[in-house]
Image (cartoon, rainbow, N blue to C red; front, top):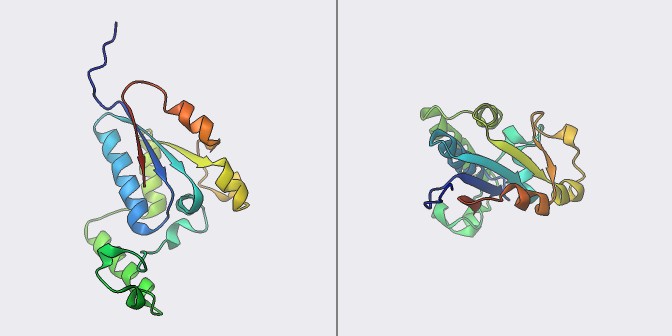
Length: 160
């Protein structure tokens, strides 16, 4: 009998927002799981789908309004140009660390074995088609189908 000793065997990462900081956090966690020999699957729902959308994935922004980590008043974060400036600065810092762009990072994740799933409800709600999305998408799933993917001992879910 294969006894379960509590180790993480699979990470199921749910991405619901496509701000740069959320997308890269999810990607780094999925990549880190694979580097540790842990299976990883990602479920892109609601605005998280933009990270997979062919025309939107390379145009993601930093969220400046309502983001307490920005350490600026909401009113300043909402000023014209602030989001673009914060996005520019974030991308500049990421380049210094040799972080890949969104499309390239997704290619890396796929090459390492990460499965990518789009949420059917969100796809229907935003009128996206599979052709709109990253070409090597593993499929479009209902939430119930995603939960079935998560079956098994040692599976952990993370919502971002």
